[in-house]
Length: 465
Image: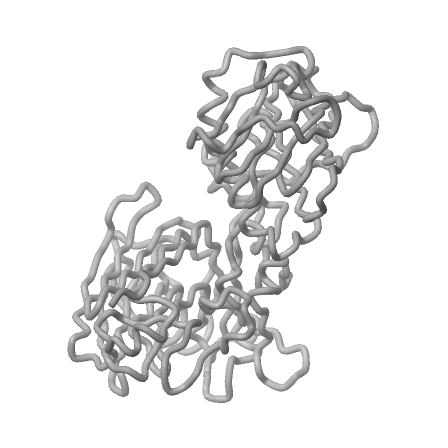
């Protein structure tokens, strides 16, 4: 599948993911099944259909139809209609629907969900097709769902075919061991990346400065097959080799790392403005009111679920095996850097944090295991490939870092008092960073760090006087 238009990609796919999770619960209780699609044009209202709208107001009949007298209108987040249909096992099918507006056509086959999207804004009706194979199943669920804008659906059809088909994009639901991601889509189509830009170790023009992908590029589905792409399980892969372009002449290490962009593609807002905040960045609520008023947000939360897949094994003993996976960056300094480190002789890795005093030194916080270059194998450490989550929560002068296992159980937590750290001033600003920031520049040039992210969320409070 090609990249989706930037205006619809994040909202449309996130809406499809929400629908997929709802379907896993809702259709399990449906007793409806038909040898063909019943009431395909909604001429009999919603007879034969499951109305999955949780709000009660996002699904309605419409007299604007492709044919006949009626269609179904979906107008709110997570609204959908679905129907269980009988099929022949191990058969190729082509599902189709006529749609006006932006929306998803999907099918649930066992625990697997596939979908296609119509993202054009054209006012007329157009056909949307979805190919799939029924596998070992004699029933599938056909659904249509909201994808960021009001849409109408009419004239569903399902036809067995012996022709070769192009399968729809897959969603790996939690029931199938996934995180509601698709291995068939670019990271910017699985995740809302309109709020980030990306640096990689690539250096296409050989100027020593790393390649950058704007938030528009990412939301359109740009990837870099060397450093930033989608894993087979749908996760978002970040890889940074020891050798490569750096973000500036003053930076010693490579990175494949996202930088928060609160402007979300509005290029009339500068990336940053020194020496004061603007709407692309945020401040702590301990900053003066004048700074809070100028900033794009106040305080912040970064939450991520990831697995570190590989760390460097060559180079200086003080650098080997370490990588930064999350940060708050200020104008010049870093209120928090979150490290993962696994030494070559250890089975598991450590997690620790650094808090940099503004224009001052680092203060270190060991959370799991030790940061030492000769650290023993941490008993409660995180192995390569093991999923875990972190939360960085900043509220005023309080900074809290939490580490959770895949089941959400607390592994470690530390609180940092920033009252004397110097960030509660009018001329500083903050932004989150996430990905891999390689902390080894002494190893083999092709040695690398790599992590796969499965969840990535940011939020901020609005300024209130």
